[in-house]
Length: 277
Image 1: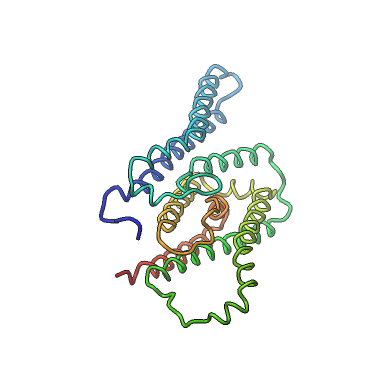
Image 2: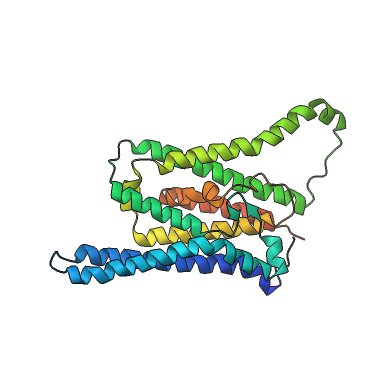
């Protein structure tokens, strides 16, 4: 591995991602508390509603400031440690430790859906696209661990097929070049279809705030796992894919399917790390 797990600074990315997650979830919980207070205020209590609106505005300012400053904060934290620099990688949307931007996007989506109050016409489409999105995301996650395992355990030693490679080299190189592009655009399409569904309001209404926070914590854990997996030597097909594209299905997936996804991920990482020498 490119980092030493025996050193304390190896856990800096994990602790940093966890800290940002806790801060954002605390802000979200204050939003929910203020919204609950506003709903319980009567028409004659306008003087009570004004401080609540002012508090919501302060929370908005704090959240937007964190979103705008996340890149600089991450770069500062990364620059303080050589091991952290080896673990952290750049993606299309910034460093793979970025997470506040994803949470802020989810918060804006939830606010828009509840304000729009669209009628759910066909929930089957959302279930199908969400399930397919989850399947592709998990498949690429497991494939990533498989490719890293081949390098870690030196499983790439195979008989020489130079003649076959020369014959099919052009086609193989084309497939190898087009594969990340096709996978990325397919995931983006599933994300767009899922997040523009008219049934999102029903999903958010059926999901308690505690469960939403747990799902966001799970999302942060997946981001941490991906961050450390990317630092391992070996091939990668999802190096440039943003976290929200690869893992955004965590918020929409039914609970039982989410448990199944967690078991699949745990099995993949147990297989990755079980025979390390």
